Length: 246
Image 1: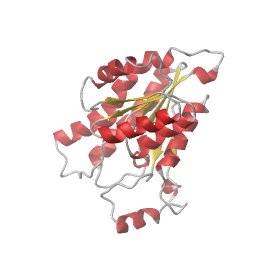
Image 2: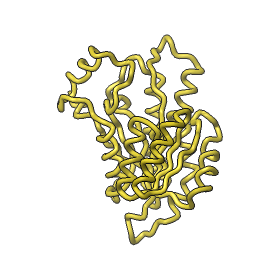
Image 3: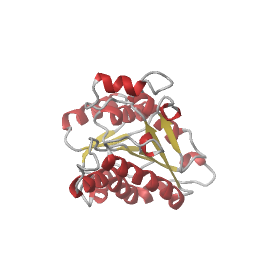
Image 4: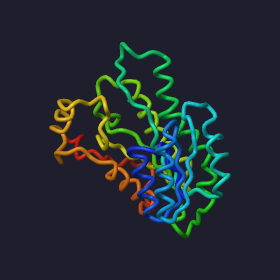
């Protein structure tokens, strides 16, 4: 059983469907994309798996309790929590204000942390020390640009993803051995609308593989961490086509 935040569109949708293809029941959260969320739920059910969509606003201080209460109405176990939902827009140093900063931190860092806290016990419930496959899994989405390659003009966003990276490694220690906590650090796996063609080509010029990634690339990395990575925690997988090498 997996819970994917922001599972109605783009990368979250690909992750939810990929895990369902692997035989998992899937719950997704969405904030405003109710129609898209319903479509994902229907696709998963068509595979013969259980699925439910939960409306959630990660900016709310009680989001962990809210999502947990709705989730347990449908399911009594959770094997994997995928913190994919995030907000993203440019905000330079001289533009940022306290409200911008607080919103990025709330959605991109505090929300995932509160969900991890709310579901930590459920994720650990099925652990058997003799069977590594029973370890609960958390996968957080961070960003390659908080790993030594800062992205100018996105200071508030980057600060929030850097916080989530630290949350990942700290939680990996605190939740071991019953739960593993790892991260995916994408480059471009779905173009932001703000990127025009010139910006896209400038970006790709620094990608050794010469192309942008896809939501399916990110989803496959999540599948690995959830299904196969039994002896891996506190790690970050870069899905960037080698972007940080140039």
